[in-house]
Picture (tube, rainbow, N blue to C red):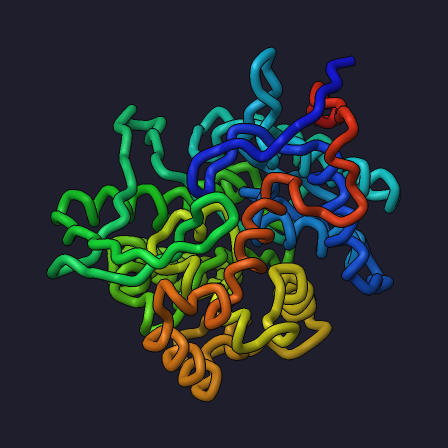
Length: 394
């Protein structure tokens, strides 16, 4: 037993430790949002990037709503003598307990999703346990990728394209919001190419290829990669930036995969949310804070969107496709009236009024919840067990 009192210590939006009880309670909260369906058969899902953000929400929604079996893949750090495990480690342990409680057969693998050895090990597990896959959900957010076939390391770059870009951004001094001006450098051609290698569709194709080579694609196999478009306010640093080039490649990959026999490939355009990946992007935190101020409870959570995703993938509801064949789960965000209201707040925000014009307190709390803090019902003064095992059935 390794119990200790855990406090949120870190820098910016990055915390050194995570709270296991808070992460466990957060998973329970997500599951409580899901209304259970009774499918005629048990689908098998492979979720790559299952421990955080939309990948976590998609895993829990699939388990709790449609009773999926399958495998979740993520790359998390175990607890050490000095530090707790990563939040994703604790969330995965809690999700495994949820799967057991629901009577589902769902396994979790902790390994580098980009590695060929990981693909081989995961597909060995899929073949032995399930015999095939109905759904592959690809939700990987990583700063770098090592191509196992060339041993080349690619590093993603957070850059604009064409010219430098200045944007408003939110930071915190203690709990107090601070409005900043951040300048983003223009990307070189090499930085754009490397970002596409990390965040584009090449690894997604390799997962589908690996499944096909092992003859593990079931009839009506569907794969979906999660993407984002976002507002014109964040466009220069996101959709029109180096990350956007990678997202465009991901979407082109969906078209290429869909040309194959027996493969239905889609990208799902999700709406804005507070995630560990998005909170690190300049401007996104301020934008999401303003968006929540405008929408309040009408802002759709990752879980609400993941429920809608599964409903559309399974045919429970009609897929909402745009002219490019993308599933659109973000129409609530990009509604012109919503964007007009957010733009008005964006232009009006100053250091003097940021605490009221933006929903800064909500954003701060949401970032802390990513690490298991500020979760209702958790006693943060009590010692917590940090030495939590990875799910034994992995």
